[in-house]
Amino acid sequence: MNTTNGMVDFHCHLDLYPDHQAAVLEADEAGVYTLAVTTTPKAWVRNHKLAKKTHHVRAAIGLHPQLVAERSGEISLWETHLAETRYVGEVGLDAGPRFYKSFDLQKQIFERVLRCCAVAGGKIISVHSVRAAKVVLDHIEAYLPPSRGKVVLHWFTGTKTEAKRAIDMGCYFSINAAMLNNARHASMVTAIPFDRLLTETDGPFTRTADRPSKPADVALVIEALGELKSLPTTTILERVRKNLHNLLS
Ligand code: MN
Image (cartoon, rainbow, N blue to C red):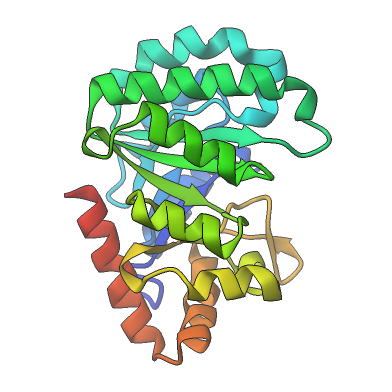
C-alpha cells in the first residue's frame, strides 16, 4: 500500500511515454485508477492488451481532434473497435489557431463519434474542448442523450456560464494541476459541484518537477483542490473516488 493508492487519473496518455508497458505497470503499482486515453484508433489494440492485465488501468479508444486533419479516415477503425470498451477518448473539438482549418471536419467526426456512442449506450467519453466549449456542448446536446452515455470534460477552460450549462447537461470534469495554477480557470473550477469533479494529469503533456507528469502526480491536484475548497486532502480523495464509482455505475 502506498500514499497514492485509490487516486484517480482520468486522462493520461500512457502510450506516449518512452516505455509504454513500464508506464502502465507504474500506474498500476501506484494504485492510481488511470484512464489511458488514445489519440488514434490504431493505438487501441496495444493499449487494451496492456491495460486489461492490470487492476487499475483501463484503455479508452479515441481519435484526437488535433489529428483529425490527417487521420479522419481512421474513424471506421474506431467504429470497428468501439464495442470492445466502455471508455472513449480522446475525442472532441479544437478551435485553436493550429487546428482551426480542420474544424469542419472535426465537427463531422465528433458528431459521428457521439452518434455511435448514443447507439451503443453506456459509454464514458473523455472530451477535449480547446477554444470550442460552446460547440462541444452543442454537439453533446444534439447527438448524445444523457441516458445514452456520460461525458467527462477534460481540461475544460470554458467560462463559468459554459461550465454551468455542462453541469446542467450532466457532464463531469477532470481537473489537472495546470488548470488550478491559472486564476481564471481555478475560479471556474470553484463553480463545479463537488460531485462532478475528477482528477487527471494529461501526462505526458503536463510537467511536474521538470519532468513529464505521471499518474501518481494527481496527488498534487488533490492537494490543490483541497486548498481551493478549504477541505482536507483525505476528503477530496474520498469524494473523487466516490465520483468515479458513481460515474461507472
Ligand atoms: Mn490529452
